[in-house]
Image (tube, rainbow, N blue to C red):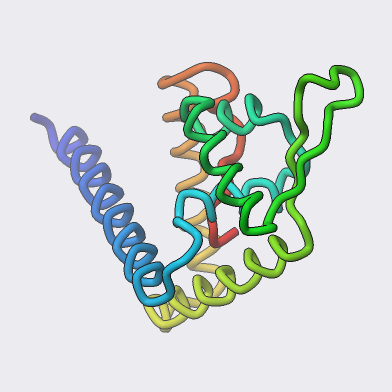
Length: 161
């Protein structure tokens, strides 16, 4: 393997570690305050960022099966965090939007997420964080282009956004 190959493999290792650490934080936060499952919370965050959508659109954006989204929507609706209404052009289809209570929940999680990152990256200035964010976004766009259909290239929202 060339040194360029080694650098790329090490990048993927570091990204996997970052993903695992983020998942660990999310699960620890959830265990400390059980309730809404983190995956449903991420769907709620997606609705807060992108607005009202059909369940099928949400499934495409989140790269999961429609049945997964349906279960998450049911959980969110039972908790009063989303609203469902018939689609005007086709009453058989539903449009899902975030409720006021859901917006408050997303804001609460966002504050916790920001506090976590401020503690973890305390010595980083905004420019360093912005530079890393830009580079990761560029890399993710390249990965999405290679990996999947056009909807994969859409910006994916997470709990912290």
